[in-house]
Length: 364
Ligand code: 9MR
Image (tube, rainbow, N blue to C red; front, top):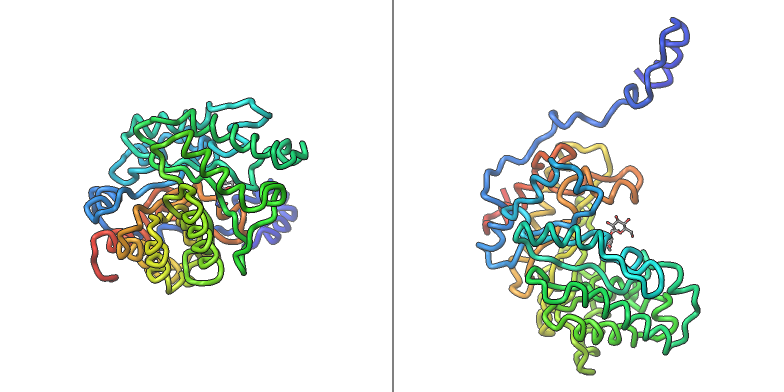
C-alpha cells in the first residue's frame, strides 16, 4: 500500500496514522540481496601480502560514538590506514586567524595510534571547508602567502614526528574538470599557481618526514585533467619543489569505472612520483539490486587490481567502509550504497571483489 492510500484508509476508519517512515516502502530488503562470502584475515593483511603499504578507510568524528562501527574500524586487520574525513581541514583546524583547534584531529589521530594504523592526513589547502576569513580578509599576495605558511606550519607542525604519519594531502583539488586548468579560488586568484609550491615547501619544512601529496578527482584515467596534473608534477619537479605523490580520489559510478586506470597510473609513476587511491567509493542509483551489486563487485575488483598492477601505487583508501556513513546519499540524490559493507556492516559482493583482487585472483 502506498503511503497516500494508507493515510486515506486511516482517515476513513478513524485509525491513528502510520508514520511516514513506517509506511513508505523501503528499497529491497538487504536479506534479499547477495552478500559477500569471503572469509579472510583482513583486507589490510591481504594488501600488505600483495606488497602494498595498506588498505585503509576514511572516518569521521561523529561515527566514533558508534561502538559497533569502531569495533570494525579498530581492527587494523581490515583497515591499516585511516584518513580523517573532515577533522584536519582548514575550517576544523584554524577557524579563526591564528587560532588552532586540534581536538577532533587529535581524536582520530589518537585512535590511529592506539590501533597501530597509519595516517593519511587530509588536507592543508583546499577551496572547500575553508573558513570565511581566508577570503573575506582580502589578503594581498604577501599576506596570503603568510597565511598559508602559518596554517601549514601549525597544522602539519602539530602532527610532525608522529610515527603513524604517512602523508599529507597538501593541496586538494587544484584543477578544473575538463581541460585541467587551475581552479579559480582565493589561492589561485591571489597567487597564481605559485600557491601550490608555497604550500608544498611549507609542508616539507613543517614535517620533513611526511610524504607530500596533491590530491584530486577525475585524474584516475587518461585525459586532459590527468595530463594537466602530470604537467604540474613536471613543473614542480623542474623548480625543485617537493612533491612525493598524487592522490587519485576515485569516486566512481557503478558500471562506469574508467578503462585506462593502469595506463594512467603508469604515466604518473614514470614521473617518479608515487600514487595512492585515496577516496574510493563506487555509487549506484538506488535501490540496490543483485545486478548492481554484482557490477559493483566487478568495479571494486578493477580498481584494486589496477593499484596492484602498478608498484608506484602504495595503497587503497575507501571513503568510509560502510554505507551507513558514506557521504554519497547526502550529496547525490537517489544514489548511494557506494562502499563494500552495507548499512548493517555486512560485507557486500564488492568486498569479495576487493579480496579477489588483493589475492591476485582472476575475477569470478
Ligand atoms: O566526506 C567529506 C564530507 O563529510 C564533507 O561534507 C565534504 C565537504 O566537501 O567533504 C567530504 O570529503 C571530500 C574530501 O575532503 C575531498 N574529496 C571529496 C570528498 C567527498 O566530498
